[in-house]
Amino acid sequence: MYTFVSDIFEVRVTKRYSFRLQQIATRWQRVFLFYLVLPLFALSGLAINIALEQAREFQDERLRDDIELLGRAIRLPISDALMNNDIARVQAQLDAVFAIGRVYGASVYDTNGELVASAGVTERDLSESVLAEQLILTGEQQDSYREVAGRDVYSQFIPVHDRAERLIGFMQLNRRAEDFDRSFKQLENIAWLAWGVVALALLTILTVGYFLTRRQQQQELDQRLREHEKMAAIGQLARGVAHELGAPLTVIAGRAKRLLQRHADADSQRQLVAIRGQVERLTDLVQQLLDFSRTPVSARKRHHLSDVVANAQQAILHEQTEQGPQIVIAEIDPAITLQCDAARMELALVNVLRNAAQAAHSEVRVSCEQSADAIVISITDDGEGLPTNSTMEQLIEPFSTTKPIGEGTGLGLAIVAHIVHAHGGRFTLRNRAAGGCEARLIFTQAG
Image 1 (cartoon, rainbow, N blue to C red):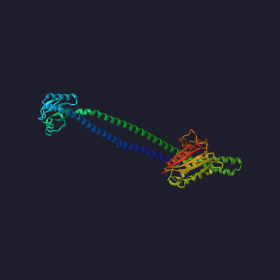
Image 2: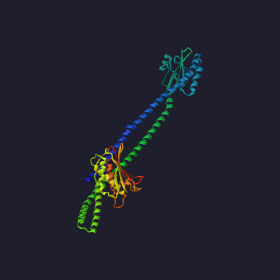
Image 3: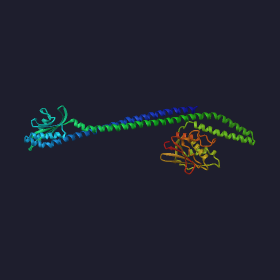
Image 4: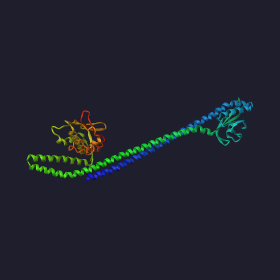
């Protein structure tokens, strides 16, 4: 009853553990999304915005410089024309500038703000113009965004001096503000479109990766849950079978022993010894069923590995014959210790040693190695090796065996894998190049 309850409890704990793992995975994915991906998008958008502002300022500066260069190009000819009162020449200069197409309007005024000549859109009354007033007072160039003829423009007021550097008038060059925006708009659209495409692509990749990862995790968790449920069900069945077989086998063995004492003739002795042999085989099967149905491990303590291996060897000595293969244990460093349930670990080693001894021709060799991060127990034999078409999953599957019918239960390696896994280790089987098979029990140093 205890094992049955333990198996159900283990399955329920596994389900809760699986659900908990899903919650943790989902939480971390949300944390990744909200605290890394979205801030990354926001920062990249902010960086693009700052870069665009810098580019806009650079572009505006370049366009202002274009107007200023035009003004400087015509300032001297206009100065000469004004000094000679050649208004036609002034007009010709303004028409030439306007024809270039870079300005919205060009005008020349005298020092009283009266219009002398113009091309394009012109302000005729500058009596309330602060820029014109400041230019006349300071004699320095002025510029600003303003409204002219109902349109937003960028205006530059450029002083015109005579040869003696006396102010004799000034020019006003206007360029539409939308020219500045239009020249920058294409670059801005390309930048934000590129950001949007990259952001969308990254979000798509993250979303697809999220769902694929979650699906894979779900499949792995479901697989592990099914394995736990299957092992629990097999353990429950094994315990039930062992319980039902245990009592009758004890009765048969006892009666066969008494009959051996009463019947001394050779035929009876031979028949009864055969019966007892079969009863012992079934008893071993019952013991293996009980071993398989037990809870994985109890409290783990640190044990010397040499003692655990020696106890496992001692447990199967009675199964060895003088003609059979010998078990050779290489010297094990006494300092090597393993955190384990000694009884269950010895059971795992007994099953591996028994399998190796049954497969070996002359020798089974046991060795132990310790590295910086793992402890490895290797058990090798010089037998025929594993069938080439067998996989590791098939070899440790409960009730699956490569031995002839009647010679194996298919539980030995399943018990080994179950115990090693319960200790946080790995159990591997492989054929050796020199022949035979090598079984390895690998435990991390934390184990």
